[in-house]
Length: 86
Image (cartoon, rainbow, N blue to C red; front, side):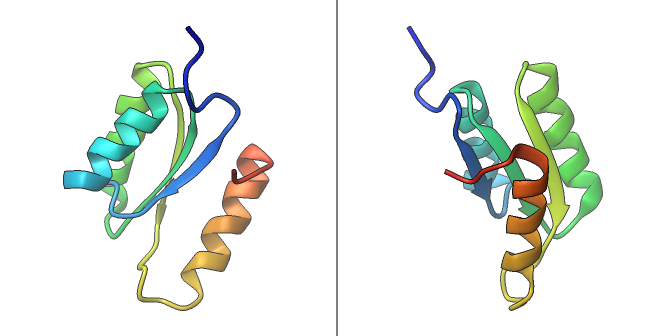
């Protein structure tokens, strides 16, 4: 059976813990490329490693959702890395 999110790219905020972390793991398991955002790079690095060790593709970006410039930066990096956000 094909993974539900193959060839998709997802941006997940708050990805270093709680619901965001669980969502990141599930999306990666289902085949999505995941762009993970949170406030602390060390926590993001741990999640990126966990996703990669399980065979997924992820990048972690420090971004504050309250910062009006954050979405543009996150989308630009997502497109640069994975070529799409779908």
